[in-house]
Image (cartoon, rainbow, N blue to C red; front, top):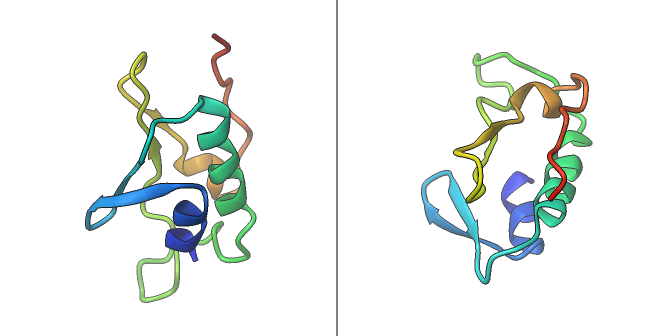
Length: 84
């Protein structure tokens, strides 16, 4: 499901679990994909016992090395996204 959301948003797989946007994208576009992932019914789980779960979700942008959004997709509060 996560792969489908990312691919529908224009991201392409470059390694096993690493995606990048084919032509580059605005931060808001990437955040919109993260919000869709957050709405998956199983995204809040943390069980590594075979149940679907989000191990880690990081958003890399050129200005910042990454924004760790794992807690957010698991149902935590929305982080302070930067405005440019």
